[in-house]
Image 1 (tube, rainbow, N blue to C red):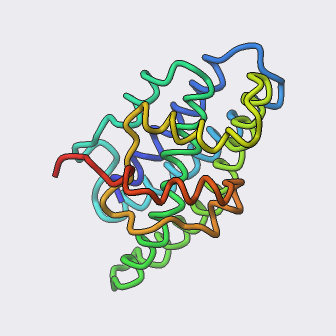
Image 2 (image 1 turned 45 degrees about the horizontal axis):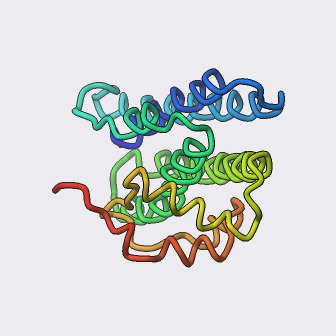
Image 3 (image 1 turned 120 degrees about the horizontal axis):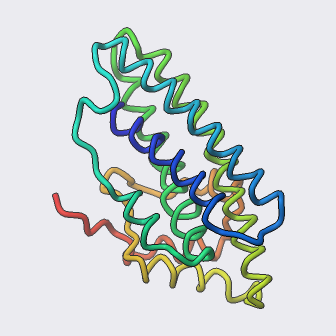
Length: 201
């Protein structure tokens, strides 16, 4: 639960940074990422409250800096959108059902409220990834990258930044990813073993 809270906390910074750092975009671009940041604040607050119910708070455990590092390295907007909302946040759509299944097996007193929070996160993350999809294609259009080359462009960006799936992720959530705007071609390319996690144990 602390790990998920950390991801949501980082997502606040990521959304606000995306809104602040990249200039000269349509006004709706900034509205989208401010809205994402607002929802990420709500996700984090729910999880931190649940941590309090079991005697902990955010910051009581060690965390990774993967999301922050990605934010620093992806200085091109197309890369940033591909790597964060359409990369790491999209992985949340794959992992969320796995987490819910584990929580559902528990008899802990916070089982029901935690499942409710995870459900909220899941539904709103589809919207977040969808926003990433919208702006990915907008930027491709501005850069004159034709639709038939966008799937391979997306995969090339992920490879450039050494993107990989976490070990907990057993399969792509095809239904959620399609709903968020991924193409079938992108899902086929993502299924390649190239993206098997290479993170150290």
